[in-house]
Every structure is written in C-alpha cells, then in structure tokens.
Image (tube, rainbow, N blue to C red; front, side, top):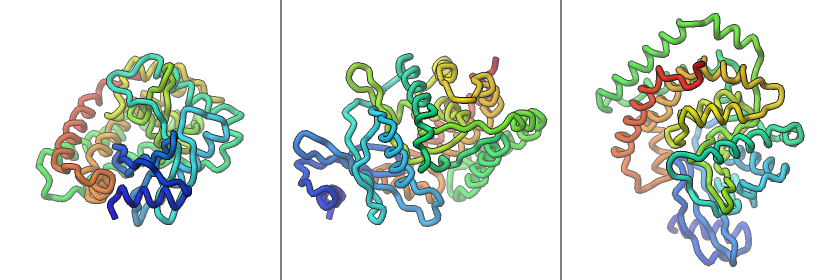
Length: 333
C-alpha cells in the first residue's frame, strides 16, 4: 500500500468515514501528515516517527496538550478527534488558515503573546493536570547550560566523513561554550537563587507553526514538544529559530506584552539577556543535527524525497548565521 492508501485506510477504520480526497501536507521534519476530506470537512492524519530510545512521546504530548486547549475553549488550534498509539498517529481537525510568509506583523506578535497569556491564566492552569514537562524543560540557568552542553556533546558524534568546515564550526561552538561558562558564574548563581520560572509553553512556537485565518485571526499548531517550561526558553527560541523570522523589536514587544502570573517581565528580560549566548550555541547544535544519523532517519521519514546533501548545506549556512548573532544580544539594555 502507498502512504496515501495507508492514511486513507487508517482514517476510514478510525472514523467510519470514507474520505473523498487524500492529500499530503508538507510539515516539519519529525512527522508526516495527510488531509482527509469527508463531505464539507477536512481532517489531518498525523504520523510520528518512532525512536527506540526516546523518553518523550511526541504523539501523547500533542494529544494531551490539544485536549487541554480544548478544555479551556481555545478555538484557534486543532480540535483533537482520536489517537492510535499502536499505529503512531493522531487525527485532528484541519485548520483553514494560510502560512505566514515574511516578516511577522505587530498584530501577530501581540495576538501570540495573548495566546500564551491565556493558556497560563489561573483558570487555564487549573485544568492542566495532565500536562507534563516540555521536551528539554529547563527551569534554572544551571539546567539550561547543562542541556546546552549535552547538545554540544551529541554534536561531537558527527561522522568523520563530513566536510572539514563542519568540524571547524563545532570546535568554535565548544570553545565558545567553555569561555562563556567561565565568564560569570556568580551571576548565574544569583539569578538561580531568585527561584524557578514556569509557564505552559507550546515550545516550538513561532510563525513557522502558525497560520493566519480570516479577519486576521491567528491559528497555532504543532504541540508535540509542549508542556511546562521556563518562559525564558520560549522567548529565546521564538527569536533564534531560523524558521521564525522574528527580529529584535518583535521579540522584545512579545516579552513586554506577555502577562504571566507571579513572573516579573524585568526578571524575565534579565534571564533572556544572561542565557542568550548559550541559546545561540544550543540552536547551532539544533540546526547541525542533520549531520547526525539518527536525525537523518527522522527527516527521511517525514520527507522521503528530500535531498539530504542540499539540506546539509542549508543547515550549515543557518548555523553560520546564528554564530554571527552571538555578540548581538537583543535583550541587552
């Protein structure tokens, strides 16, 4: 059976509906999705790559977060229909918005900050009992730095046949990390003594996982890494993710527009400033993980026709661009 026929069969077996049309959705690098049309409605069948040693189920994470969003009547997200853990797929409603291209509008920044504010209201948090920690959650500066170091260690496993410039960049990341760790340990300790910062986070959040609908209503999707996390990481990822074209002004506007219970925006800004260089290194590791074989397997699962060598070139260029941002901290006052 072809992938289309499998998606059609799974949809029909699960819902009892015979789809009139099945089409593939071009999505991210961790999953493969298909739309199934039935009468006037469309649904998404989303398949998740299964990793043997993974300690984080992206399928269950997304399912639980979608159920949480449904419980608080959040309407600008997919509606969960059903899950099948054995066969590794979810079915949820199709969002009709269009992809956001180019620089995001101020309206997107404000409405996205409002979305994060809403899901962290006292009323919403009271309904979040089934939400676990986000993937790679880090609630202290020390933990964030430790996770960054683990990313760097994984990058050291890049096969020796890769281009020399890749190893030169990895060496630069290692040297820079070691220098940063020695720089201001007293500042790190002081801010960790201020206590943990926690919020409910979509994690992989930005224009790349958002749509714009009618009347400038923004829609949000892809919650497979969502959960409890430090809002500092949410903000840093929003700015540094190469897929989300957020600039200095927009990320600071987002931060100041955000309202989180018991979290001072001043403290949040300070933590963003301190962790920014480590976040840059972390993102360099993320974009370079295409050079690691386990990551390549996931990419091929999601995009069977992908040209790996071309993607490697593109990711290396993104890593160089990120490195150039190291000394341009947008949170410095």
